[in-house]
Image (cartoon, rainbow, N blue to C red; front, side, top):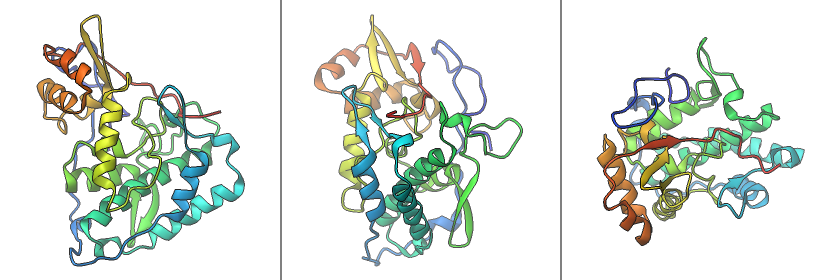
Length: 273
């Protein structure tokens, strides 16, 4: 599968340099099943503990993980949490529980993958995806849920993006990079997802790595161009999204902006070490 991390494509009109291709949001009917009457809640004690102990947000507003310093016992707890979640019959859960489940599982798997291959300077250096021209771990089948093997790409692009069709998904899943929206401080739950997504959107849009105006030019994260289809389909849609979540002063500055002049993304590992 071709993903945003793999190949260069023709530049978007009015963008200063080429952007990367984003994978299509391909429906997977197997994961569209759910039970709206199911009120059972899925819990994430292992992930809650891990984040409380090891997620560190710096003065620069970027959340990092001290991968080298994480004790063996805490790694084992994370592994056990992932194994437990893999055994959950998620197709029988409600939609709200499913979103929290998949978002948390994605983030847990990402951290686990980095830990298993550390030290690396970037998650793209973990070249375990299949294919000659692939990079990173996103295409590798990392676990099995309900008898089906899944990759990070499967979770993000064939489940989360296709079922929920919500651009804020890109603020929920973390790719262990400085340029990525922050790893959440606590797990998603059915009750907290909406508030967490809104807060994450505001945090990223108003951080310089999300969007900034420099000398009258709008500079955005490459994420918006990779996934412009999710953010309205064009630059006008992206800018409208930014205005929605921008602080008042930033929204005012965006009022006369009609194009994105440049995009940036820092693939360095979000390593607190």
